[in-house]
Each structure stands twice: as C-alpha cells, then as structure tokens.
Length: 170
Ligand SMILES: Cc1cc2nc3c(=O)[nH]c(=O)nc-3n(C[C@H](O)[C@H](O)[C@H](O)COP(=O)(O)O)c2cc1C
Image (cartoon, rainbow, N blue to C red):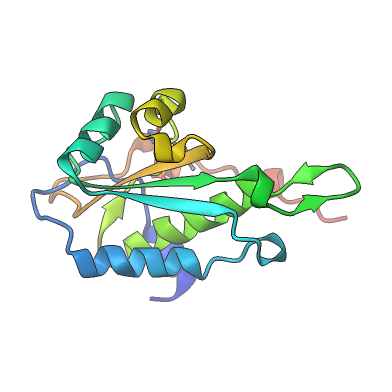
C-alpha cells in the first residue's frame, strides 16, 4: 500500500475480534522495528514480547487500555546507549524509541492487524513486575489484534489541525 494511503487509513483501534495474532506476523513487526533509523545508528531500544500468561497479566495490572488483546509489545529505551547532541546535551534515546514505535504501529496496520499506542500505563509498576525493564524508559505498550467487525475510529481521530496552523514557511 502506498504510505500516505496507509497513514490516512490507520486509526487507534480499541476493539479487537477473538482471532489470535499469528507468530509470523509478530516476527514481521519486530523486523520492522529493527530497520528503524536511530541517531548515529545507536539503536538504544528494546522490545519485549509479552507472550506468557504471566507477562500478559502484568500488562493488565498496569493499564486499563488493553482492549481484550492477547498479544502485547512494550517499547523501551536506554539513555546511556544513545547519541547525545553536544550543543545542548540533548539525549536522543526517546526520539529513537519513538521512531521504532512508529515503525511498529505502521507495520501492524500494514499487516492487516490493529493496535493503539498506549502511553497511559503505570511504568514504575511495570518495572517492578518485570525487572528486565528496570534500566529502561518505557514509552509504549502495543496491544495487538484483529479489529472487531464493528470497530471504529474515535471522534478524536478526525480532529486534525489544519495545514495553516501547523506549517510555517520561513
Ligand atoms: C504517545 C501516544 C500515547 C497514547 N496513549 C494512549 C493511551 O494510553 N490510551 C489510548 O486509548 N490511546 C492512546 N493513544 C492514542 C491517541 O489517543 C490517538 O492516536 C489520537 O487520539 C489520534 O487518534 P488516531 O490514532 O485514531 O488517529 C496514544 C497515542 C500516542 C501517539
């Protein structure tokens, strides 16, 4: 699919069907994350596939935004592995992880699956439950599934600022 077409039809899906996500598709999503660009190619990110019942239960304990999904990915970054811009000491770890997360979100859609980028979760608690995540900044949980037949975009989806407000030509 042409990228702009994909970007326009994507929406945050908050209702999934019962159909399970095939493992090969999860592998493709991971592949899309690996090819994401990062500053100086430092790749200061990590992805956790929350596959076991215990891992999924941990997700359900830290957010209400799970939408009945049975497959979850978590994206994190490590500042001490990232490029730092010397002029203002700007650490790019969160920028890099956001690019990775965007690749994940778009690949999910391109595969005919659905998701919502979930930022509203109790990150300190998730780190307690999953000590592997302790050293990381956690930016996203992706509940992944097939969209339910009656899933629809929220009204917010179409509330977009106009070009005149966003773009300033200098
Ligand atoms: C960084 C980020 C965090 C978000 N966190 C949540 C969340 O915790 N729960 C939720 O339901 N939606 C969440 N969303 C989805 C946004 O609300 C949604 O992208 C926005 O309203 C635009 O709608 P659309 O994705 O359907 O175009 C998040 C999106 C982003 C990019």
